[in-house]
Image (cartoon, rainbow, N blue to C red; front, side, top):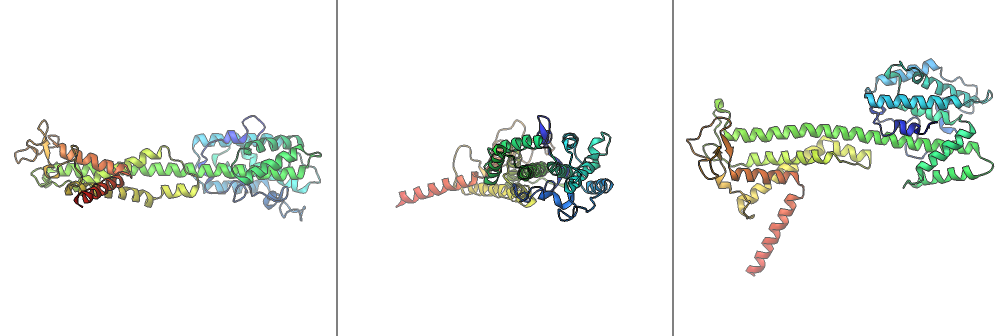
Length: 405
């Protein structure tokens, strides 16, 4: 909630509060929109002490609430500066709204909720408060507690704003909440307790949405970080396989591929691995997941490894197609002519001759090796490349059988 134009939705907005972790926002529902069935019911757990049945129960002291918040903060990762600035702004907005609340002296549940919100927001009032004293989950809790004591005019305004935000939702529960809010706003007299219950559910649903987006953003960042490492590693494997075959490690006597006998299979598979990792890295820049579980699966090590194996296996299949001669064309490499040529020599020149200098930088892959690397990279980069090739070979084989028959 907010009193200014942006509101906490904008001040918090699309920030990625990494400290929010997997917690559900505040004391919100496990599923969006599943708020309390009675007005203020969601506040009883901690705001009302023993609940409405025990109005005299002592609420938690501000010192205890702040200590609990600090202890929980020590178990969370630190927020980055941008998220911390937005969190502080949310605290400021909530402090303003909290200042509008004035529960009556006989309203024991309202007073308990007011004191708990005051304890949570105490850190936000101090610009020099340590970062560990602030928490997205605590701010969400304070936002729910403030709903309990909003004055009628602010309650109506906030209910209208929240309902408008859910009007275009595809979720039937959200649409039902928005419709209920509109009905309450148009009714006379205004049913204030019911309106607080609907507003609390709208607030909880919005908090759930923001927490879910936060989790998805954090998992997407983890996915990209892992892909960066995998792509660098795959490139290193590819270059290592290529350079060792050129024979650059002379002190160890590695001359395989320079004096002849170079098959290119290992290097082709390495090129396929690099192509698969490069494809995944490029695609990660525009990754969109519809759920936390989908993003978890995508970011898992096993899923990334499976993608690499598909790329390496596809490159090996392409190599075997070239070896059998089932694929013909101008741009198809001749595996019998794979070699490394001196810089400036033709593709079929002195590439594999014994008289070649074997120092690093004087030998380059000839045209056939280069074509094999390109095809292998494409086989790893495109998941549909090998299936299309199989379809092409299958069609050619069927045509041959028809001509023979």
